[in-house]
Length: 156
Image 1: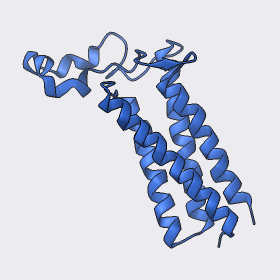
Image 2: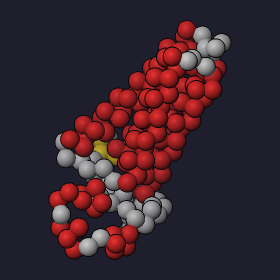
Image 3: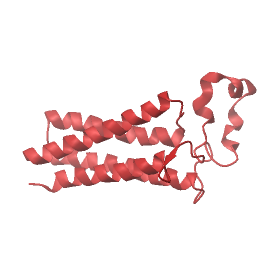
Image 4: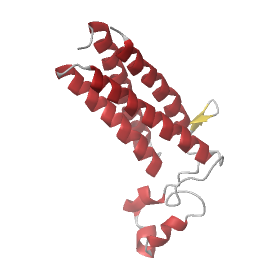
């Protein structure tokens, strides 16, 4: 069983993932189409939000640990994605490099407006603030959320 303060911290961390997820969709609505690795980061945030919801009904340490793991996962993917954008290492061939992963698309697919998500390259910075791209900011904020989850886990 989790203490009251542990539950509050876990709810705060889950809500933080919800805010980051909402921000990602806001950027998408503003015209910043996500790449494949952006979606991977969103999945972990969605999982953290769901874990926070389940914690509301069934507060326990295992779920709190899973919340920390979800936050750490999205932080890791964000850091990896930021490195791909900076050309520090190679990203997935399906969304970075010379676009060889796009070879499976037909000419009609490449010209269609509803396949935009297939064409967003993971190794290009679409937005940055203070020298950090969206995935880098996700890594920073998600690492902070992971620390909150862990603090919730360690409190008695």
